[in-house]
Amino acid sequence: MARRDPTTMTPPRPAALTSARDAARTAVASPIPDSGIALQAEPGHLIRRAHQLAVSTFHDTHGRQITPVQYAILRALQDTPGIDQVTLADKVALDTSTTADIATRLEAKGWIVRELLPRRQRALSLTPEGEAVLADMLPRVVPMYRQLLAPLAPAEQAEFLHLLRKFVLLNEPAPPNATNDPAADPTSGKPEF
Image (cartoon, rainbow, N blue to C red; front, side):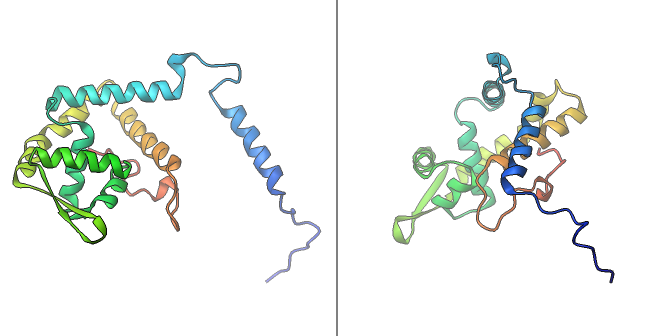
């Protein structure tokens, strides 16, 4: 194996210099101007409007007896029956008190049961009525999302979903020993219907 001449090797850059260059590169490449941005072009405003469109489409499809967040909880319980409330909260990206409030409402509707576990935890499961609610909803889910994304060309739909997943993944706090590499996402590039 040939030895490299240390005088020709590029020395490592100081972290401060690297981060300053990265910041400068990001600032130059950013579509957000330094001088201000119109409300209708602000990312937060556009994300809120996209959320409003998604919720409106959800209610037009499924009615108002269930919310998108309640649906997410029912789907998570379908995937993982008996999950504890804290793990469920993490799975659907809610805080534990909000999850507890929603679980109480779903239990009052007769759609879930909560079983007390040690240390005041609760295991949640769907009831037969909750299973029936989901069974009624699921055939309309794919058509609902196709309708929501219909204004975009198929390639744009795939890219939009890819960028949404990437945006969420990169902005979530990473659990210990986890990677925020969107390439590691098994659904990367695939529509999530």
